[in-house]
Amino acid sequence: MFSSFRVLREQWIRAKYEREEFVATQSAGSREGFLWKRGRDSRQFQKRRFILSAGEGIMKYYTKECKSPKAVISIETLNAMFQTEKMKHAHGLQITFNTDGQIRNLFVYHESGKEIVDWFNAIRAARYHYLRTTFPDVPEAELIPRITREYTKEGYMEKTGPKQKEAFKMRWFSLDSQERILIYFKNPLDAFEQGRVYIGSAAEGYEVRDGFPQGVQVKKRKPGITVVTPTREFVFMCDNDSDQREWIDALNGVLAQPLTG
Picture: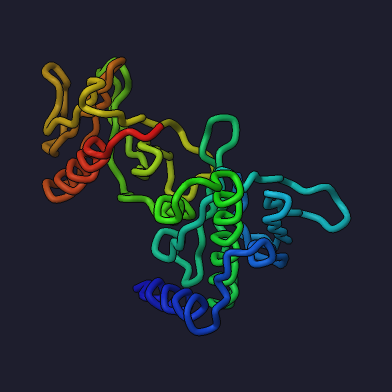
């Protein structure tokens, strides 16, 4: 349905190679304009003015003219990814950043596919400028994967609480392999996370198991996943065997990654 994701990627490739718009300079990481942004506590999209400045190391947006910015976002934790299917919009972009130890989501779009791709390129250029100036001795090949990233896997699972006696509740999960965290939300387009599970290494006592821990009462005949951490077990229920296998493979992929300092 949303094959426009392919169109957006084609626009991005054209911008990068044909128009040579992706240039890792401070000016390339600066942009100003209007985007439609989803409200934090509502489903309505409102037109907001965004300003990105690689030189200042920030991105900010305004709800009203001649007022102070609604938010000032450090480029240090800024990330962006196309989300046409999740947002159900052909030119949807999810912008994430950290605030008070939580993931904050901004869901934005523009009527023009080229415009949203230009914003994506500008964010990448600003991120590259930040990484290059902050870590001047790190090889280019190590910096490039950290410019922006997509989630390894997203989708619904049900989860129970720490006592493993609470009712299972449906939640939306996003696996960020680079940060080694499984984040969950009440709904896919929520502004703030409900919680997270850090996934360390097997040597530290982390493990992903097929099925439920002994004693967990399950009314539905659905497959389970148990993520073992040094402090507790996180128990999830998948819709079917295929989904369970995909989640287990993705989580084990994070476990297998070497820890970085």
